[in-house]
Image (cartoon, rainbow, N blue to C red; front, side, top):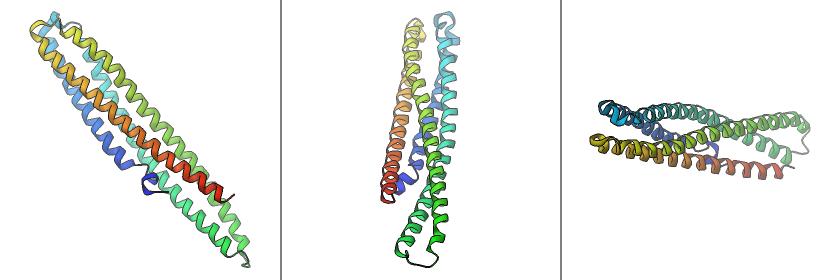
Length: 213
């Protein structure tokens, strides 16, 4: 297994998601600015208030999801490293059994080999569990961003009725829209990185399993 696959690119994913959290935080600030302007505009921006409330809640949810992803990613990385060590130990025991087939006590290795195999299978199940959870969390963020883009489009309609406050509100709407796109693209990149790493791991696990059949 390559080092990239072993760590499941956790460091790269962490960097990507750190930016996602920052953008979500900046989005929350933009929303607060929009709320302040909408309050000043009064009846002219009445429809803007529920929109800003929704986006503010969504940005906070996104930051919580990023925190959850980081936690799951750390756990996945830990299991991946453990699985790599178990895999190496298993391979070494198999090699010893091959080259020392005629040794007097070689049969004593059988129990150790079986134990390592059971441990490896357990770790592989954990890896798949964490990968599935990570993909689900990333999908949650992507869906929120898709909904946010629709909401932002509605906010532009409301901003057009805000008369002298229109420009400021439209500018904020544009900023939020860009933030949603950045978050969605970063999450998509992390998702593909995770999938590629897991695909590498699955191929290698299958190849090594076939070797020992």
